[in-house]
Amino acid sequence: MDISAIRDQALAFRERLGRVKRSTDLSDLADAGWYPFDTLNCFSILDRFLRGPQRELLSLSGGEPMLDLGCGDGDLSFFLESMIPAGPAIHTMDFPASNHNGMGGVYRLREVLESRIQIEPVNLDSQFVLPQARYGLTFFLGVLYHLKNPIYVLEQLAEHSRYCVFSTKISNDAGSTAKLLDTPEDETNFWEFSRIGLERLLKRCGWTVVQFELVTDSKDGHPNGRFYALLKSYWADEDPVYALGEGWHATEHQAWRWTGRTFAATLRRAAGSTTVDLRFHLPEAIVAALGAVTLTAYAGGRKLGSAMFGEAGEHVLSLPLPSGNAGEVEVRWELDKAYPPSASDPRELGVQVCFARGEGEAAPMRVH
Image (tube, rainbow, N blue to C red; front, side, top):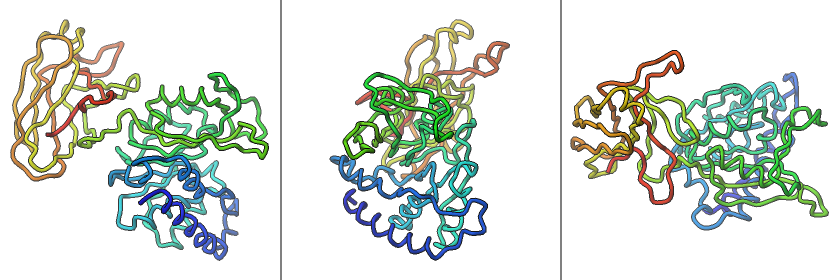
């Protein structure tokens, strides 16, 4: 569905939701009252700047779960559910301590609307964990400048989301700045980004700005306002989608991960695919310490094969898959040895797998 049709549906849903809110009592909540801002207006803004295939916004989710992070009263989540009633799961998250009504509004609406959206509280200023390993499309609107640690949040989202509809406040500063505010009028505001500074932050945290628009706040056209964008993660995989299993260490430098001695992933298998590939880097330090290593792959409890690697550098382990139907296939790789934990690094270290890739480069793991 084109974004213009989504916009029209959002406007109609806003009217319906307004009637529901007016007839729903929130007086029993400690901070009674509905979230006062129009979340669904984002689709009117998106309609102005999205071009090409990105205009079919909801198709970018690829059938994977969607995330509404910083949901307010959940207007956006309930609208998405109304658009795709039998579609992917919709996760709705906010922080009760800073939510306008302690998240009472979103819970009350879920009950009144008989909705199936999944609601979870989250403190984005903590070392939080998202409930889903992979989201096709995330909505992250008007939250970033409220966060104490925007870098951690953006990196987490880039690692777990393929696309993101994003907005935040920006200043008219022409430099590459991000200012930490000193006792602002609204104590929940921590950051003031210039456009250049914001784009640099997004890039460093694993995002590409696909398309964007600047929306001014004031009638005289003063450039202070909002930056709206469609973002694409560096790890957005347009080929077979994978989900990481056991044996992976945290992402480093927004690009690659160390594995342990044993590590696994679930890959999407197309009809007729016969081979599974793993692209990895064998560090010189591992070869110097351990010598040649043997890597073996398994799928469905069956050994696919193995190969020995004795030189540092980039390698590909390509092995035949047993015959099977299209769908998900879990693959497990096992090294015969790995660098053991030490006083300086408590991790067991195997090989490195790079997930950031340029135009035309193959995915690090794929079934073909």
